[in-house]
Each structure stands twice: as structure tokens, then as C-alpha cells.
Image (tube, rainbow, N blue to C red; front, top):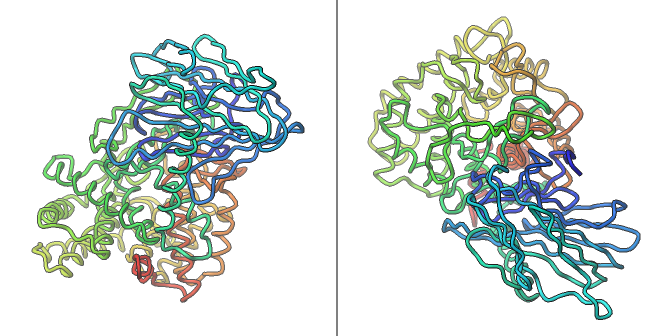
Length: 627
């Protein structure tokens, strides 16, 4: 299968709340970083089919059909193989590690036949440090296999004793240079499998009961977590899957949410828009607070707000501003961008970038998203302590001083700083939410100054962010280019959803940026972003469009658009970052932005279909546990 790449959408995700793995429809783990989301890859054939490394379990024939599903209400992935001789399954999962950071993580691959007979072939070919670190292979008889390098260690543990058919072993193992090949034949009702462990652990033989215990413990964890959701609307299954996906992308020791668990998956196949998303963006994670609170997952929202406050405390007073736009999951901000020249990239999409050079950009909108998250959390009883409020005051004073500066903007373009309308609008949000919080809690604050600057921002956007010739709010000063980020204007309360200026803006967007239910972020040919090539429609923006439609009184169109968007999900209900011209998923996968926006659109649309278009503030109160 050299040089063969599955579609980006042909994957499911499993994880243990500290890292994650992607598994394609044919039972191949082709992406796994360890011990954290942002660690170098151990299996990376998704970005280089020949040198990236993989772990594959599949029938020994090419004549099979596959089906894939999640065990209901869990993050346990079932890959089914259907042949004329029998039906077999591989059940993949990662036992949850808990809230303490660890180097030891387990990938469990449970293999069984449910009808007839099937011979499985397992190939394990790890490649440490993005394929740059050589390793040794040691087969330990009766126990397992150790793959060891200076960059890490992976241990394979056997499950149970040898499978015997008519007194003969039904399987055998052989080395393949840098890996191993395992072949085994199973009859209906027989089960085996392997456990892959990272860290400094010795191989051992696990009995069948241990395998079953891991299976049941993991299943019960996910089912109990899913049961805490308060969502009971029209789209329960897809909302539940999106919530589980967001949970899978949350680093439990800190509460930080990564934008995606992958790096370098292209926004245009063969192009250079290949970014590393295995970090926590203030923007993405802040938006997740609304999604999580809206469906009752208060603990996760609280954990992120605590992480956010830690970042504000660390950085207030720096010349670059109170916050970086992104961090590693542990809160550190060393994200030096480099290209891994040894890897070819997904279907030849080079460079393969790790790290992210956008980390040092000035993006003013993050303060609005952060303050919106803090304000929402406060409405759910997650009140800031005195020290936290002091930090917020300092941050908002900084916003007062700097909101008028040019910046790089929400889409992290590399074409130079601009006076982006979205950045200024979100500075308005930051000050507005700060004022509300101070007044509701009776906290000391520079209310007069914050109010004056908030109002100055409003007046400036209404005068310079509005283009009368275009009849729309535009991307930045001195342009007539539209930008889908401004779909958040009515959602954040900056403009009334039926204001003629907003209805005119939405009509212009529908003419220029909307393609059926799909929405482009902006037109890079009209507003150069410093990069070659084009991109697909942005799934996040499509769900924002659903919400904007509903609030503007078009609930019927909003529902139809939402239902259309769901047809672009993959076979497991997962979304990447973008959708291409023929409906293919593009960019890093799965994407937190896409799934949190789906949850928000579903929750808000449910409420408006039941109560009429417009205000959805009661949604958050309804989402409270016991509310």
C-alpha cells in the first residue's frame, strides 16, 4: 500500500484525554502522537505513507467490505470486516488516563470474529519523532515486543495464550525489519488482540479478563460522561458525538482544548496551507465554553476558564499583550514552526509543518472571545476570585489602549497587519462583557473608561467598518471584501439581527461567500493572505450562518441549511476544518471549531424553532444541570 492515502474523512478518533489516535476505515492507525497531543508522532503514515509509520489490522484478503461505527455513547471505535468466509471486528479504544500527566498511554485493539472464519494480518511499523529517529525491535517470547529509540518506546503486550485449532497454533509472528507482522486465524466466538503501551514498561501477557475489564471500564466512563449532558433536542445523536469529540481533544491535566489532534493536513491537497493545530487557541477554546455550558458540561467549561485565567495571570504586562493567541496544552508558549523535510506530506502536500509561527501574531479578537467565556462562566456560578478579577481589569485596560492597532486577524493571514473589523468588534465584546460583569458583581472597575472606549469602537465600526457602496460590513478598512467572521455580530449582540444594515450584510454574504449551505471565510483572491493556492468552505462559518439565519427570522431556511450541513459529516459524524468543491473534507481532522459550532447551532436553533427567532439567552440557563 506504499503511497496510498485514505481520504481525510475516512477516519475515526479514539483517545485517553491526553493524546489521541486516528484510525481509517480499513483498520490502520495512521496518526498517533505520544505522550501528548503536541508530541512527535509514533504513527504518522497519514502525512507520509511510506516513512510515517502505522499499525494495521485487517483481513489477509483484499476481497472485503468495511463498516465503521462507534459503540453508542462512547469513544470506542468498531471497524467491521465483511467477507464471504466470515465477519470480523476490530474494537479500538484507549483507557482513560485521568488528570495526572503521564508518559504511559495504552492503545487497545480487540480482535474478534462474530461469524464464520477470518484470518487477520497485523502489521506494526512505528516511526519515532516524525520518522527521524531510528529504533530497535526486540521480540520477547511469550510476552510481547519492544520498539525502542532515543525518542521514545512502544511496547506490544500479548492478549491471552496461543489460539489453537486442532492442537496447532492459529497464528504466528515474524520480524519485518523495523516492524513485525502477525497473522492469526479466528473462528466465530474467538477473541484476541494486542495492547500497545508507551513509556518505560515491560512487555507481558495479559489474560482475557484484563482485556474485558479494560473494555468495560472504558465503556462505562464514556457512557457516564455522556449521561451528564442536558441536551434533549432534535439532533441528540450528532450533538452527543460532537461533545464526545470535543472531550477527546481536551487535555485532562489542564483542561486545555486543542484545535485538532493532527498536523499538516492540507486545506488544499498539494498546496502549502498545511498547519499544525495540536495547540490550544484562546479563540477556539473560549467558544467551546458556550457549547459546553449549553449542553450541561459545566466541569469542562470550568476547567478551561481556570486554564485561561492562569494564562492571563502569567502574561499581564508583557509588551506583546496580556495573552498569546495560542499555547501548548501545558500552558507553555514555545511553538517554533519548522518543516519536517523527511516527510512527503498528505498526498504530496508539502511542507509538513509542526509548531506554529502564528503564535506570536497580534490578534485582538481573542480578548472578546476570552471575556465572553469568562462572562458566560460567571452566569453559571463560576465566579472569579478577587485575584482573577484584578487580572481581568488589567487585561481590559490594555484593550482600551490598543484596540485601534492593526493586527493579523482571526484567520491568521500572513499578508500583513490590517485594521480588521472583526478584531475591533470583538474588542467591543471584551469591554461590554467586562462592564456587565463588574456591574452585576459590584466589582471595582474603570467603568467610565471602559464604557467610553466601547462606545468609540462601536461608532468607528459603524462609520469605517460599514461600506455603503457594498451595503455591508467589510473585512477591514479601505476594502469592500466580505468576511464570514462578521456573522458573529448579531450572535454577540453587537447589531440587532433584523437591523437593515445587518440584513443587507447577510444578503451580500449570501451572494459572495455562501455556496448552498457552505460558507467561505473570505475570498483570498480579492484579499491576498500571503499564501499560494485556494481553500475550501469553512465548516465553522457554515454553522455560524445557520445561527445568523435563525436569529434574523429565517428559521425554516436555517433548519434546512443545518440539515444539509450534517450530510457533509463523515460516516461517524465527524467534521474536519473545511469542505472542498466536491464535498471532500479538508484540513486538520477532526476540528474542534467545527464541532463546537455545530453544538451551538443545534442548541440555538432548537430553542428558536420552539420559541421563535431572536434571543437565545435562556438556552444557557436551560443548559444548567437540574435547570
